[in-house]
Image 1 (tube, rainbow, N blue to C red):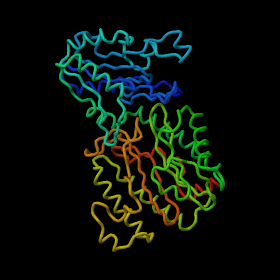
Image 2: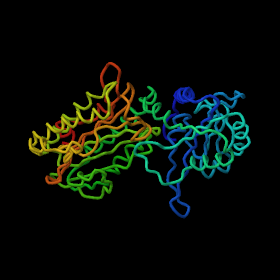
Image 3: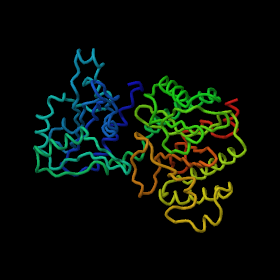
Image 4: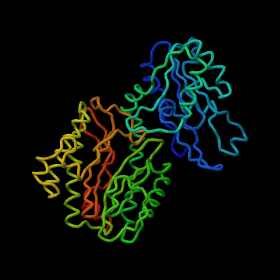
Length: 429
């Protein structure tokens, strides 16, 4: 891994919090992700399943974590099963975790090789009543591929049909949404790497560059600072491309007078950052572009103030909508009649700002979190309002990552990344 070793106290604490929510005499099983094929002998780069990583820090394929807090054998209260390493594997694939290194990473003392799984699992299953399975219940999930987790669940259910089944995901939704200080530090590192990439662009952009040139500059900077690269597929949208919310082609030339909307950010140690900035290709905003830019920035600043403990996500978005409505009226994009006659389910402001303002962020860019429950301290949210005007050939989105705090107000992990229009112009020139 490119990143520095994470303090194992994080994973020890995460496991302790999880098992505290388990039913008596139950086990919980977590599998790593597969390495997914492309064709021939090509595969996609491995990405660890975030839940086993959250609970163990193990970041390699063919790994299984089992938690059994009531195990009669104390050794079996936390178990890792790993792919056995060898000299041959080390030559062809690189070094895998040894049992000693697995303990150093996770704090788990009992480590078996996968070849011992069936024997140990039989012993465990004769001693427990309930098995927690780990399904994906994220509100945006849409998974068609059968995962390693799915296959494992099919296997044990067929072999041990009399056991009760429980769900890990509701526990993880709550635990993962509230960040430990170690996690916030890792996210701050991801944001700092993102800052380096963005500042690099400000001295690079000029009329005639291509969107993919910017993508290449960012990737260079991210990898140079121990990131694997982008936390999500980057959006680098010049001109009217900015009005396609998930524009990812990044294949057009940036022309004089246009704006470039960029939704680009680095990951670090599997933790995401999420940044949006909009900059002028020529290094200077027009009066109209500046007016819209300042409107978006005002909405972002006001929305950020509302991210406090106890806030309700749905109510927050209603209030942000009111602020955006006022700004759109001021810009002449909507009028009072539009507001008076609006559909409550699709308010007038949605014509120019059609997406949500905030989402949880952490190990996933759209991280776990139960949106019907009040916000809590140490949750981390994005704040990302935008105004999109196809008729005028540009769109503007501004986004930062913000930690909710108990008493001191929201803390912006991206406070050092330039956002004021004047500062961006100064740095570009």
